Length: 323
Image 1: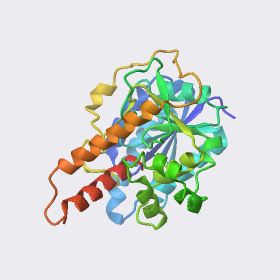
Image 2: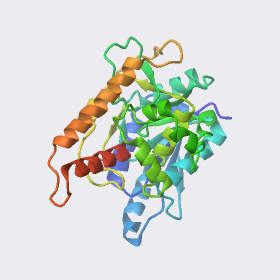
Image 3: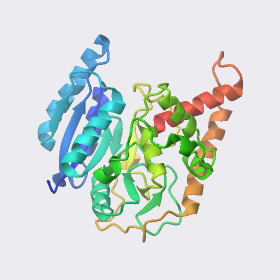
């Protein structure tokens, strides 16, 4: 097994976003410790042929700089199956993987944090993922990272031992539905509609792989390691993506805010493998504030009752955030 860490970049038809993502990736520390794989999904329709090919031209041009392997799908797998197959393959080959999508701009510290964290928690089964996006950074941190019992889909890493729990058909779902403690965790104390998203996924009303991953990790009572400051910026909120809208509801700021290194060479990790309840409560408060912000926004004519429009918009936003 290679001592290098595989990094998978998943793309579809956004050449400019892909160019920006690769430019940032090439500026990251520790690229010499990685093997890069560029996954290009096939066109969904004939109308997408040109934009998919333009994106592939970007990948081919950048591949020599990172000595990357380019995987061009002949058919359209969709984001969920594209990520599942790529992640599963690299986990089988390397035992671990770092995952980036084409709309993400990573900071210079991103790969350093991912590699160090993968090494540090490789043999800690309760830690199932490493995340790069920190929605609500705790203000009382002494370490460079902290743990939460919540997954992420924007700039992340995992191990084969954890990914093996992912399943297209959620296991033990009947028992989960009757487990009040689990439901409280899964919906973050009622601040999110993740259980409804899961039911929609099972019924085929959305194509989210992220909600299935969240289910798998939550049923294992798994933990996710996050940096004390976000190391990724999502540039997909410009209306160009298949899965993202056109506003910065996560309050990320500008991409230039993420271009300065903030982490030391030797990272200070939290002691033990447990999360602080106050850190989870702070994240729940963040989602409550997002609900309030969404409820106060004007809704389009024809949306019906304001509460229904609010619920629909919030559900859409959460779906974007969880793949």
